[in-house]
Length: 222
Image 1: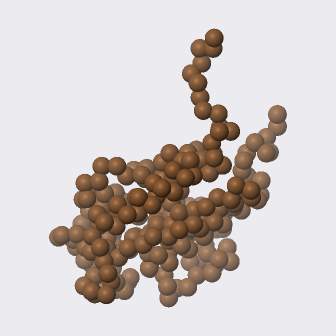
Image 2: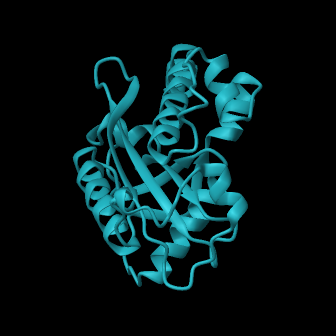
Image 3: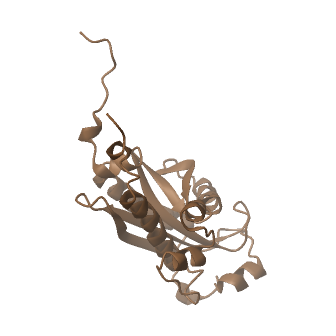
């Protein structure tokens, strides 16, 4: 008998699970009332899940969920940040929900899609991802959510990926260089920025595949 520990054959995994080592990328964008995740309000959050075509191996946008969010109790609201985003936290027409409701609803969708894709853990995709992940983690802590589907510190940063693939690090310029289009009038809305970031991520990952970069075994010698 073999003394080796049994391992799951990679061929039994879905193509999606094989692509990112079991991680399920979810594109996220937040709009906030400042730069400090601990003290400044989270005002909008959006998440876009991705679809992988099993025939072509190419990624596309799947489903987007977004919320306007009520500032948490005692949250700081920086006037300059509000002027930049154009968000009025006091506007009753925002239809805002509390952080707890927004996060739990997003996490429910992410878990459903992650399970369907055969993946084990979600990983955030965002433009300058440390910022968005910092606000997400701070909100998770405030809401005392014990189980988040997202990895607590790993992420895919499209600013870095776009710098490598397109020579651009600004979201608008990267999208324009990739001929994806970008409407500056729509920017700084969590839903719009999330979907443009998702388009950019799919473009880069798909371009890498079409150039022969994945799966690596296609180009390796026996």
